[in-house]
Image (cartoon, rainbow, N blue to C red):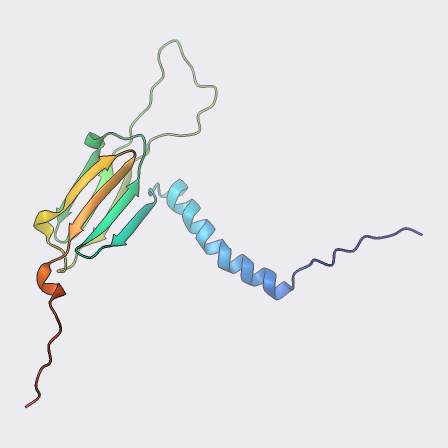
Length: 145
């Protein structure tokens, strides 16, 4: 007679399905965004007087970026940058490359488009989009006649 070890730490089928479908979309969207579409990850921050956009784009130079605002569409892009080896070198393994990307954001009337600023340091491209002041005005009661 042989003994069969039983694992009592099993999950229910329902629990497995919930875990699969809750984790699957975010994992796939991240892989598609970074590997297929070449979108760098970003943060959008809502501050008291502005919005901040931070893109994680290490390896580029400040001059590699093109930031453009046209018809309320803010576009951040860069062109593919080849990393070339010296004549007497050859790659044994190459796991990364600087790729082209393009991200666009619709800017609404809450933003002072004339005062948008950008700064690139330590591999992070930071954009500051100041909010218009009159939108932060206090609420007022309106009398009904």
